[in-house]
Amino acid sequence: MELSRDAVLALPEIILAASALILLVWGAFAKKTGPVFVLAAVASLAAAAFAAATGPGGRAFGGALIADDWAGFAQVAIFAASAVAVVLCDRWFASRGTNRFELTVLIILAALGMGVMVSAGDLVSLYVGIELHSLALYVLAAFQRDDAKSSEAGLKYFVLGALSSGLLLYGASLVYGFAGSTRFIDIAAATNGGASVGVLFGLVFLICGIGFKVSAAPFHMWTPDVYEGAPTPIVGFFAGAPKLAAMALFARLLTEGFGGALEQWRQVVLIIALLSVFVGAFAGLAQSNLKRLWAYSSIANIGYALIGLAAGGQMGVQSMLIFMALYTVDVTGFFACLAALQRGGKSMESFDDFAGLMRERPGLCLAVTAFSLSALGLPPFSGFWAKFYVFKAALAAGPLATWAAVLGLIGSVVAAFYYLRLIKVMWLDPAPSQTDAPAGGAVAVAYATALFAFPAVMAALIYLDPLSLAAAAFR
Image 1 (cartoon, rainbow, N blue to C red):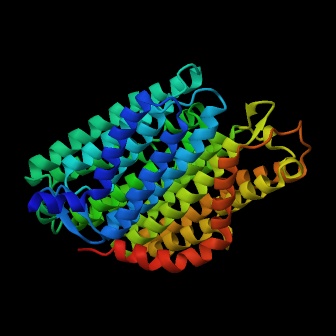
Image 2 (image 1 turned 120 degrees about the horizontal axis):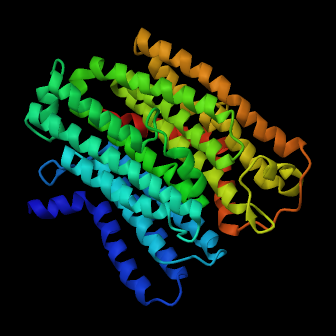
Image 3 (image 1 turned 90 degrees about the vertical axis):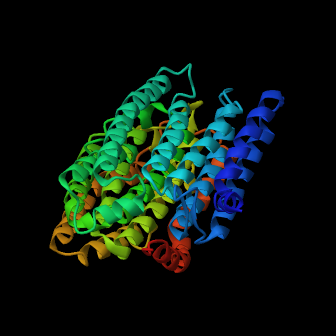
């Protein structure tokens, strides 16, 4: 009976694992890749539906996995983003003659790893989830193996990812040695009232390892090169869902495992948050490649999410969850626009390529404009509401978090320059040549996510606010 109960609680992960195995066998014998992509998208949506239906089910496998509102909220967003990634990849890779069924298997395995991450209840399942999703992402980054940039991106990601895995393992071993357990609830009991020096050292290593996964400064060095070199729809995938998963894991680790040491880890997280905001804002000013630009934008946005997390408490965790959910939609939509646009058979990735886009492709230009204004934080776009929740939580958390919010607002003003520059280029500069006909799937994703950025976000927040508040509740 215990095993059957655990299997029910882990049903979303079981669906994805079984789907990956079925797709692997099917793809090896199928003559066409189209049905494989459809099945992968359906499997991801089915896992999302079961994650939404599971609710606060409890702990499975001796506390290694937790099925609660927190995991359900994050899993629905992650699995839905995975289904969108399958749609984006199908046409994009098919047009280049590199569409292979292994792509869907890797996306499903990455989603499975992320599902384990957000459900992790101890340091072992934390590490297993991180490694499962990371190994799939390394291969996805280098999926165009005949492209030198793609191969370089995958290699850099792998090498630096191995370093972060070492930091995670070392930190986990220190925490286990000084706290006497790998389970978050036992670590919380050991750190109630403050962490010892040994546990604190281990926690710092864990923070550094997860900081790499979310590309927070100063662990961001892989991000611009990997974003520039990896295939565009793949970048759209791992710029959103994996970061949401890593941030949800980060929040569970810090609040459930080390909640008693809040004042000790808050300072570290705030320093990383502000470094991320300013590195992303100022380094982005010098970029001409839009994929590199959005890499620095993502670094800055992770900084804002970390400010919300550092605020602590239910309000701080809620602000982080809402921020990451809205950010995932925006970044997926922007890279859908990049995947849809070409000039002369070549991808449009620079400011010059986007010149005059309003006259060539007004619909996609409006979508990119919406994502830029949202990333800037202009009301009433979704990015404004994301930052509103973060700054509201920070202002209620005391003077240290309040000053972090003020500095974060300054960083947002600096970053506004490159978002407005992109809008100016698209609307006012002359077009160098005619754009190619855009791919249908990517255009549909771009329009849908742009409409979500505004006005659909106003209605979505009616549901997101209570759902995220329930997910952030401490148990």
